[in-house]
Image 1 (tube, helix red, strand yellow):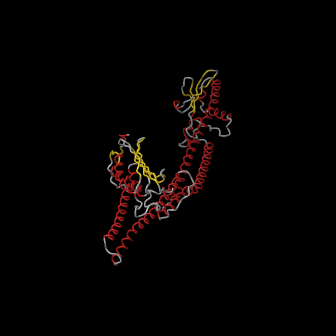
Image 2 (image 1 turned 90 degrees about the vertical axis):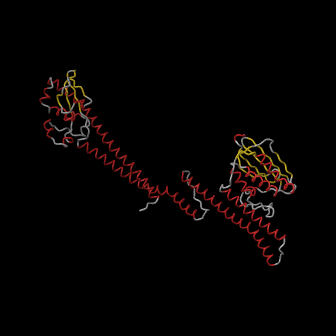
Image 3 (image 1 turned 120 degrees about the vertical axis):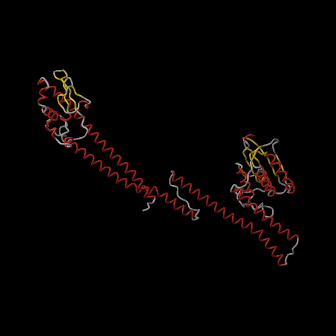
Length: 479
């Protein structure tokens, strides 16, 4: 069965909680065993102090250790007395009176459980550390309690620490604690199950919204938006999705507008061509040099439009050939101005040029920069009223080069100025199809400038028209 994202997140959260609960349960189990065993050993060590005192008094009574060697079971009575004096004696029963012989007959593993008591783990040494009582190896015992008789050390008492619990009451107590821990672990696991599913649904809900919105977006609904409910990664993803949808919406609108404008631009000269050819065919208009010239004008207009479209298309995909090198921008701009002077004079316009005396080098393609300046100067010439002014300047400062082209009226509104670099956009009040182009020149100019890592902007000119400002990085070796 294929699991969806919600179930996968639920299982991931549940598995993580189950592993945590299991680890906590095992750690607590181990901790209880060790802690309780350490507690029991500590109680037995405290009992050894009292047993050492009783052995010392017994030594004083008998005057030697012969009584213990002849009657080893006597130590069981002393141990029973220490149990009777133990404040915690109600917790554990007194030890069984088992002799060495009885202990030896106990089969394994019962001897490790029922008879693993003090008698089996006790070792009594005399003053010279010779073993008097005990079957354990004295080398395994770390702490020996001194046994004093009449103020002097007459022997040593040692106890081998228990390595596991043997008393039934101790085992029952530990078992009860472990059962409680198991019940707590089970309750925690059930709580994790109850919390994991709603949490997984809450975490996956934004992803489901994004998935549904992405499906709508892929089907062409570019107006779709998703709500942004958080500032985490999902919130950033939602904002990025909304930005993407907005960009696609704008691009789709621009594409439709572009297609409509291109169709309109192509329809006009084609309609004129078709009408004039039909008039010649019907005999309404004679075939003459004038009619052929009119047809040639429309063909030229179509050819110019197609060429502009081709230039824009290849510049958009970066297919324009750029042969960059260190070139003198002053010379390129001066040559472009010289090419524009004859038509500027015909307008007529007053041309003011301010160029630096020395060279200004930029790393660029000279032909593309010449195309850029030709387009801008031709644009300013066409759309500046006769008798106006055209100011051109070049300045190099702070590692950059700035070219300013300012013309006099007519000006444009703020909304029109922002859209000047849009494709096929034309300010209809100042442009017409007979003198202007299709509105692709400034879009091509922007692509050329951006290909040189520069920027082009349009401002309101102090002369009343438009101020075009181009900034380009200066060549590093000539800054």
